[in-house]
Image (cartoon, rainbow, N blue to C red; front, side):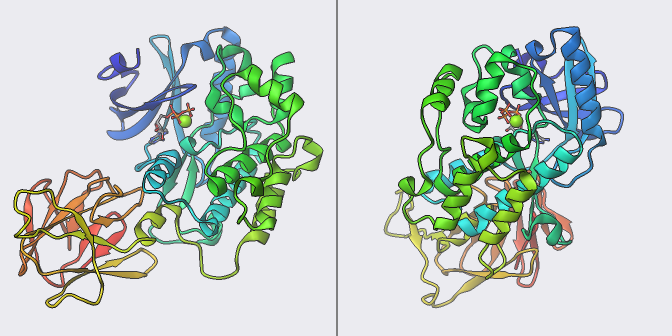
Length: 435
Ligand SMILES: Nc1ncnc2c1ncn2[C@@H]1O[C@H](COP(=O)(O)OP(=O)(O)OP(=O)(O)O)[C@@H](O)[C@H]1O
Ligand SMILES: [Mg+2]
């Protein structure tokens, strides 16, 4: 159904490709034929806008979304209805969502560290608080709905001390209002619904969510960031109801014994069964998270972990291993006899140094994917962004058809064409500068 919409035009939006689909609809990369800009367009699932009541509610909510102005909330620029399809138009964000990033970390057998997880949860909590103040009853804070904007410069304070801004992309319909509309209820939502949302929702759909339910969802998010999984998962709504009626969530330290007690206590309080035992609202939870922050080094972006927690690897093409796939080897920083060095500068000014051993035919892929030789895991960088070919004397650089392109000094590199990278020239990839 969604696939066949590709190429079609809704009002003045041409749907170019499908970015993904979920519980409330499907998101397309679309082109606004009026402004000639690319946008993200969400087509709402028909069952959520079937009745006239739902259609009015959609228009009301969507109208309210367009009024919001917060760097942590995706900008909703338009909404409408065409060919019996209700849609929401948003700014198009680049990069992966947090769920995709966490999946990559899991595959690489790594995980986000607490010093990154806590400020990230705090940032999301502050966004949630803002939305609550603007009467947005519900925001879906699951990792699939969190994307990132990587700012070039600006104040860190506004971003809870992080060098990036987490952006909530789903201002979707309140699940307690739409509980009855989902049959079966999407299991992915269930871990994030508070016990009272699950229980009340069944008997009395139409109840708005409240602040303690926000805190519960944010507590589950922190649980995922700190412990890799939600405290409980359910296959069906009735399983969730049964669980919340009869059982309690496991203590975080029973899952991860080395979790600092203060972090464990904060999670437990956020996801307490009784709403009265939780932090009263998202702002209070955010404040509690500040107390957990180590007052040491400034936090690093979560996505940077993949790039920083492991030594850089280069593929060394060996003359003896002719015809064989080249195995990645660890590069010892001290050993190259004739070192060629790439300096990577972050927007914050930090510099990393990568030495390339002067062995014939070095082919080095730079990008977000964890198996690249130089992993730059940032939302504005493509999975395989650029390639550097080093013949022992000179470097050539090739943009691999990346979304945000590569620049050598001021020159935008034509995709898939090799260009000589002279010493002293700056290769710009996303917000990184390489020399
Ligand atoms: N404004 C946006 N810019 C770019 N990509 C977006 C934007 N909003 C959503 N996406 C991406 O589109 C995909 C589909 O989003 P959608 O919300 O339909 O599904 P989901 O987030 O995977 O699941 P759910 O419906 O449960 O939220 C996701 O990968 C999401 O990251
Ligand atoms: Mg979503």
